Length: 227
Image (cartoon, rainbow, N blue to C red; front, side, top):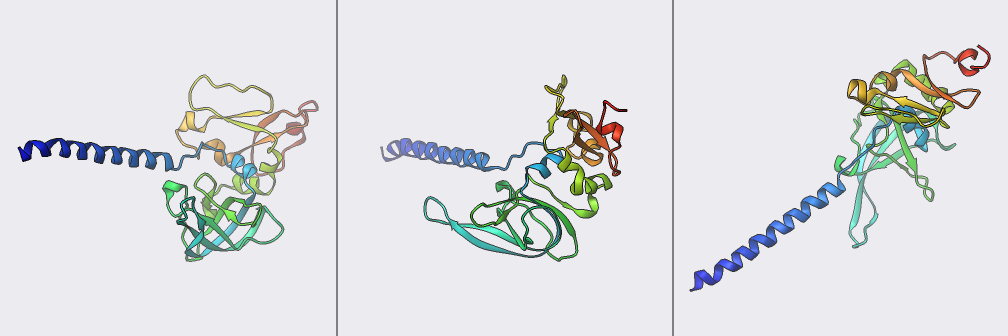
C-alpha cells in the first residue's frame, strides 16, 4: 500500500523536474547570442567607436544590479589606443563586454602584443564603450589592404548606402542605393571576397556601387554621367 501510494508522487516529481529542465533550456536558448551577417562597412557605419588598439589587461567588475537586486558582472578590458577611426574626441582607455560568448561577450588576448580592430557602442550617460560579438574585434594583421583603407575613408563614403545580404537565389535590390552582398551565397562565409576587398560607395547620382581597391575612386566611377 505504501509503495503504490508513493508511485504517483514519484511520477509527479519526475514531471516537475523535466518541466524545470525544459524551462531552463528554453531560457538558455533565449539568452544565446545571435548576430545577423554584416559586411565590415555595415559594422563601421553602425558603430559609435572604431579603433585600433592593444589589449593590456582584463578584470571582472560589477556594473550594477538586475531587476532582482543581484549583481551584474562584466569583463573590463584595459586597452592602449593606437588610432581612432571613428568616435569621441577623447581616447578610449577601456571597454566592457559580457562574461560569456552566449551573452555576446568577446574574448581577446591581454598580453599587449597583438593589435586589434575593435568596434563598439558608447553609452550616452557615461561614455562607456560596450563591445559585443556582433561587432568587429579582428587582429589588425588579418585585415586586407582594402579593409584598412576602408576604415580611413571608403566605408564612411558609403554609410548612406544599404548593403543587402543575399543567402539564397533569387537575389534582388529594391533601389539604386543598394549593393548586393553575395559572400554567403557564393562562398558560404561572411568573410569572403566582397567583405575583404570591396566597399559600397555612393556616387554623384546618389546610386551606390561596389568599389575595389585601396586607391582613390576615379572620376569616371564617382561620376557615371561623365565617363
